[in-house]
Length: 479
Image (cartoon, rainbow, N blue to C red; front, side, top):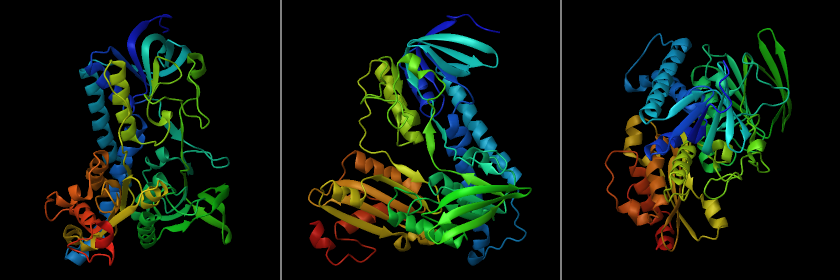
């Protein structure tokens, strides 16, 4: 059935129901704006359905399975350990289902109208929503673009869902591959590669850049590299995947490495070389919405596009391509549309990589701070000296605090180790609020806990650590 040309109108049309779009829709509705959300698949977007949440669920399962044999050291021995990959998938999917249904309930409870389909601009104030039930026209007063991003495909390594996989395919595997090649050593490739290595796969990583996790502080990456080696993961950096020859039972990948050409057999090949914005096929040109040189939607300092009534948030509006950044931008855009004094004026956006061990960071690294002209002082505290880490047998890694030497203002924090994803919350608050080293050091932290490492790192930067020895010149330099 085809609905009439001007079937309905709405004050605010949100295109995309991911962590940016659904948050924007809920906040706008809370502020009294009549809001319609259009989503072509499930609410929650890629992050909730095919990315952040399912990957973390699988990471949890794989980590537990990997640790069980290690419990023998504690006097706990488990015999006959077996991983049922299909049941692990079923459990993961139930986690996703609970969250997606919860999001949909929240949208409806807040008065958001949900339309299923793909929105395509027909003019600066109208879209057509195409679905299996026909086409519906919607006119809007304001619009928020939250269409997200998708995996980049490599020529010669196009996804087939059988042998060559994108992250979405890999998250749905009901069998553990014996041999997995990961093209791309970024956070998605390493997170999923680690999952399958912990579950028993032989994993090989091919990365073009000089190090894994390009753009991440090499100090942090080295700790993860050591763990990958312990897991038996073979890593080739400064290497390029050249060709793939598929056979009856898998494929053989050819790669060029600094030591010459190599061939690697694989049951599955995961291609994870980045993501690109979803801007094609939605009629942006008809809405007078321009893209920048990298293909992202152009936005100003208030997230407004070149269309005066359209805002863009999340991955489609440019990096960092992070769910929590999209959510905050969604709040800002909704509040601006509702007439509130809002803007994306936060000081810090944290990043978390769920490798083994985890990596998390916020603000400036030591190198970045020096490049910006700061006179830098740093404090570092290893998890080998932390009681809570020792009691759990999780001692790899450290916390590093970067501060201005004169003012002691915290400029950044880098963490690699257990619970890094949790610890970064306090660190982000410190950077956001312009906290000083003394603020972290003098805050009473519960013992024994992981957050004590932040306090101890701040004490080290001040030259007065308790549970490690001070660097010879730390006290003099910090004061």
